[in-house]
Amino acid sequence: MNMKERVLVADIPNHIGETITIAGWVSVRRDHGKLVFLDIRDRSGSVQAIVLPSSGEAYEAVKDIRNENVVRIGGLVKERPGGAEKAGSVLGGVEIEVLSIGKLSGEEAALPFDLSSPVLDLNIDTLLDHRTLALRHPKQRAIFKIYATVLAAYGDHMREAGFLEIKTPKLVASATEGGANVFTVDYFGRKAYLAQSPQFYKQAGISVFERVFEVGPVFRAEPHFTTRHVNEYIGLDAELAFIESFTEVMDELEAAMNHIFSTVEQKCQAELALHETAVPTLVPFPRLRLSEALIILKEKYGKEVEGSDIDAEGERMIGEYAKETFGSDFIFLTHYPTDLRPFYTMPNADDPSVTESFDLLYRGLEIASGGQRIHDFHQLVESIRKRGMNADDFASYLDVFRYGCPPHGGWGLGSERIIQKLLGLGTIKEALLYPRDVKRLSP
Ligand code: ATP
Ligand code: MG
Image (cartoon, rainbow, N blue to C red):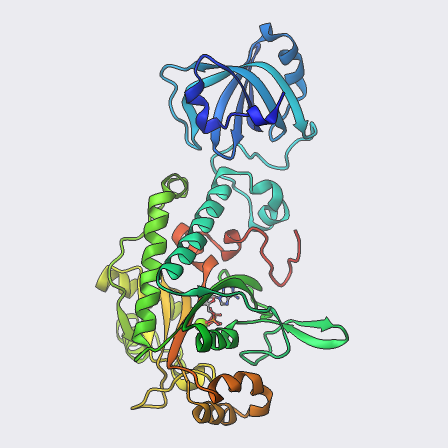
């Protein structure tokens, strides 16, 4: 049998009455009296195959075929009147009468859990311990189909909007944002770090190309035990030059989010349905000063916030407020206090205690942070000093500004949190193929 002649499941209805070759995984094997039914899935869909006792050799061969074994089948395509389309998209109108079947791979071993049930009811540790197998489940596969669509839509939109895609190093000599949350690695006997942000390279990027974006790994060494943190994630970053105000950065991010969601809506109907969800109705994202949000929290929700920052519970409440008040799943919080933002953040001209910055919340969870950056060399050096750091440690970064850098701003957007909130996943870890957390480094 020649694999080049293989017909994809989705294409089977074009071959009624013909003998064809298909190949894929056995999703379910069902024995009814003497008949054996197999649901065969490939990357395009799923179809029912029947093995009749009269098929002789095939009937003999099917005896040691189990769920999830990989097989190739030669069979006759038959119309299946009234065959309903099943959830998980088994082709309803056709079936395959098996003439020959061969196992390509797989033992007769029993599976550690039932992959054929509509919902994989596993605790998160079991799900991740058996990740390579669990990913075969339709709902798991759907997550990563949607994820791939989000990545593609982001890239398409950014390119369309004039941003150049860049890739920047993840092995770096110093910690971008400072602080303790960096992983150290041994670099030929020297200390190096895993990048916790592409920030400096993005700024160097706009000083050359005006508009840049990057899709790349971000490493955070924080020992988190939350449902929204992992230690390695994929950041959707962007930076744009010649802005007058950080509101233009929010405009660009909002446009990107709109494109991502409308693309997912167009291309991922079946996958969204498996997760019993839909893309949110998109209205203009409301924008609220953080200081006003804190007042709303106090007056409307009786929540006192310590200091001037908002915590995760406060973000959830403001998410509810945005939904009730503006019918929006998104809200921008703006003007974060200067001491809560990195040194490169532009202070507000009238009130330098706050910055020209924002966070974007989606269903009450921060998915992005951004703002305008300082582009004046002296102001930047001063900001570094004020934070008790040494400007000499930032020499090559500061060169960007010494030789001239346009006014600019940008954002860092977490790709997995978008998926987590869109699909209502219990933890962000389900939105990564192989998540890394404090305890997990494999698979
Ligand atoms: P948080 O306050 O939730 O810990 P952060 O403010 O430290 O996040 P930023 O440095 O602003 O994070 O990073 C930009 C975006 O990257 C965040 O808005 C979020 O979507 C995503 N992100 C940050 N840290 C993580 C993480 N540990 N795991 C997954 N996504 C993350
Ligand atoms: Mg942030």
